[in-house]
Structure formats: C-alpha cells, structure tokens
Image 1: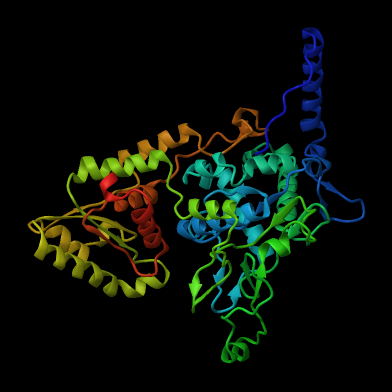
Image 2: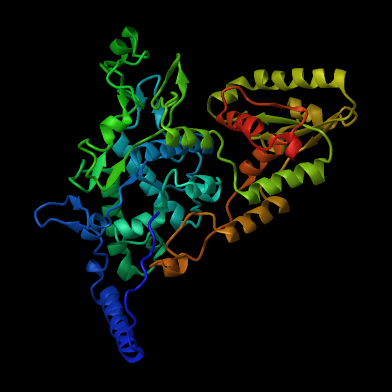
Length: 484
C-alpha cells in the first residue's frame, strides 16, 4: 500500500495564511481563466497525440497492475481472484475496479475463439467506469467482497481505481460529474486521455505502461510452466469456417511479465479479461492451480478459495434466515431468463421438483424454500414457482426484493463502513464536491447468496450458473448452515 507522507517542517502561521490566499488565487485562475491546462497529470509530446506518463506517475516507484472485468458479478469475482493471484506472483499493486453493471461489458466466447481484443475491452471498461461515477453507482468490489485478510497479511497490495487515477493520471474521476460548461470540455478531454493511456490504445510505452494484448485465443497463463502447447486448440473445421490460425501456448506469467522481463520497468501492467473456466479438460486463460513449494504462493492460493462478502452483507443474510425463515430450509437458485438459461427452464424446474419430492418423503411439512431467481414474482403464476406458492400445505416459499428494508439497511451500513481500501480521503479528493448523487448500492444478489449459504436442507442451483458455483463455495468453505 502507498501511504501519505507527513510534512517534514512546520511553518509559522502568518506565512501559511499568506500561502493559502495565494494558492486560492492560483486555483481560481487555474480553473476559470485557463481551463485547458487545469489537469497537468498527463502530458503529450508536442509532435504526437500519444499520451505519456507524467513525471509524478513515474516517480512513484510503485509497480501497478490492472485488468478489465466484464459480464455478471460472479464472473467479475472470478476475474478478481485471478488478478489477486497474478498481482501477488508479480509483486505488483493491484488496482481494484468497481463492480460493473451486468453485461455492460462483454468478452465473447473463448471456446469459439471469438472475443473482444484486450485494448478494446479495456477502453470499454473505462467508459463504463466514468458512467458509474456520473450516475452515482460506483461501488468498488472491495466494498462488497471482504479482502481484509489479504491486505493485512501483506500477501498482496491493493489500491482503489479512483485513488490510482488521481495519483497516476493526475485527475479525479469525480470530475466526471462536473456540470460547469466552462470546464466540461477540458475535463472530458483529460478523462479521455487518461482512459486512452490506461487502455493501451497507443500500445506499450517504455517505463510507463505495458499493455498485455495476449488473450484466450493464443495464451494460457501458468506458473512454473512455459512454452508448451495447450491441450485445447481450434479444430480444423473451426479454422476453415472462421478462417483462423490461432495456436494456444502455455506461458509462465512470472517469466514473461515478472522481474527480468521486458515488462519489469513498466509502471503499469494492463491486462484485458482475466476470466477463465474449465473447457475440454483445459483452462481457457488462467491455469495457476499447481502445488508449489513457495509458501507465500500457497498461502495466497488458500485465501482466495473463498473471498467472503463484507460483514454487513453476511449479517443481513443470516438475519433473514434466522428471524424470518426461522427453521431448516432449502435454497433454490433459479436462473431462468438470461442467455442460455432461458432455453432450459423445464430442466431447471425438474431439478428442484426432484429435490422437493425427496424432502417430502423424508421430513415434516410444510417444507420451507428460499427462492432466488431472475424471474419477477408477477410472472410466477403459470410456472412451477406459482404451483409451489399456492400449495401452502406442503410448501412455504420465501424470497427477498431489492427494496426490502433489510436489504436497504444493509446498504446504508455498508456505505458507512468504508470497506473500499482507500488511502486518499474522500474529503481530500479533488472534484469530490461535484459528485453528490451517490446512490445506495443494490445488495440483493449478495444477501440472497448469503441466505442460500445457510440452507440446512440443501441447495439446488442452476447448472452452469457461476452464481450457483459461488454459493457452493460459500457452503463448502464459508458460512455453513451450522454457523447461521
């Protein structure tokens, strides 16, 4: 972590007062008389539009790493875990991103070798980050996921994206909220320049940024394994149909991007997507699971198996299980509307039906069921969920809504807790005054997952859903039903 340095000297009161008046004058002149030069953090050469690192960024001496999250929350959490692991291996400070809107940024399909180029996904993420700031919906993933054990153990260093932009680009993201027409053009230009630099749109810049342009079409990142062909390659039919010639190689992330490599001197290492999944007995992009003798690496691997939600979310979920359901219950996570899942509603309901029939034979009635689903309650009537809610003799169905008071109070407490791992005080952030529209975050999905982790009668998840996978991890490693 970077820390603020204390001033080396104390000055007499009168000179300080005079200095404050002088600086105030410069500030007003700087902002209202010379708007085009008010954000000096980034610099350009006189003959090129290519952004360059500021002297301030290069003088930090810290090495950073960021990446481009995408898709839904569970995918973003998976990417965050991979980012923590790689940042720890490379000994770089991880830039912690916000949680993006569901599918605001998409990657494509690695198995089909049809994905967005890393530089394009990075700039798309940047544009969405600016939109989250403007709309008051920016919430860091570190405000939802409890990473205190990682930071306190010094296994990995982190910095909030907003703080990173402030010190590296020399501009506050909060200035995106500015409404003064005299300043909007200059602010927009500076934000665009910063985003262009972070996205690596102009390629890698010596000592400034190394843009990783390898993606899952050509590369599988490993640790202590290098140069081999991966077992999953595009088949001949796909090559001919799509006219592609990709070859997937396994690359040692430490050897390729760590000390002694051409990347070592770069202040910022910028990845695209870090999402990976198992496909045909291979990992699509990140395959760092092997056992090593490096104790620090092993400790990091152990800690990221489960990164729990922050206490405010966990408390709300457990309270609902204890105070509202009040008895052993089954959790059903039913993804019915999104993507591939909308075509498999019948199979999804059949899995729940079989589990309930088994419980009816074994236990007392009514069976309590907590349901989390993307199907609105108004549309339950002609579905199996409608049948369950109407059969009050055999079943008692519970669910949560985003506007429920329990969820709302959890959001208020979370915002007051300040889990965001920020080291630049909000009150000291330039431009903070322009963003006064911060909304309460939507915690429904996270509270629902916590409730499901407490289900002592079992869990029925949607096959292929990353949300279901995360709940299974919570039930295996985290808050078991006995702890709720």
